Length: 263
Image 1 (tube, rainbow, N blue to C red):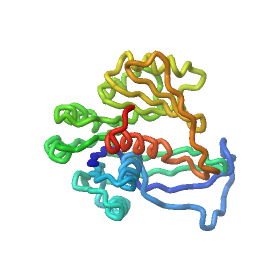
Image 2: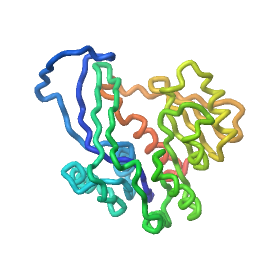
Image 3: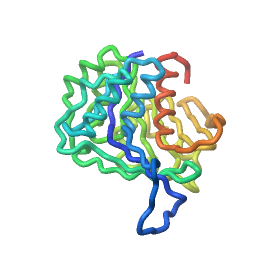
């Protein structure tokens, strides 16, 4: 399977907390518990696909600084191609992730100039030609890539992240994707099957999936009268849920376009 992934790659600092809300303290001593790594939705999806055996090209805006070089080195260790990664930013994106004792996380991001970056469409089309799937983050620099991929006949998976509603203006361009994945975290109190049906009416997607954390997921295709509910797999205690949705998106893309399984 060949995949092109467009999204954010960043330096990620993991900071443990006792719970949320996090109480004020003038100082906390955490020997050996503050961890630096490479993360970001684009990197996480590309890494997971590579671990599943895919040949992956990552498109992510970076700077020529130590965090940017750390991203490139981590990608190289995984066999993820970085020919599409730009180095034109003044500063590579960064994040600080607070994680409590139950695994819940709060992601604090500083994406800097990454959101205003532009992508060379010709370079993207060259990389995407003949690919089995393109996985795009819901970022402004991804918007022109969706019609470019569709023009090449390459299926597109878009992660809408924490959606706000079926008619949110920011999401509308991405509703042309073949597969839509999204999180329920900002839909508290909503009729979730009703939300998916409303989104389906605005979308051309052949599969829409809403992840529900510990409650599994809901899925809907154009022909379904009702949603399919899939329970979560019990993998034992989870110390950190950061990137769980990214792993889900990668595994779904692999199942659909690597293993060629029906929705």
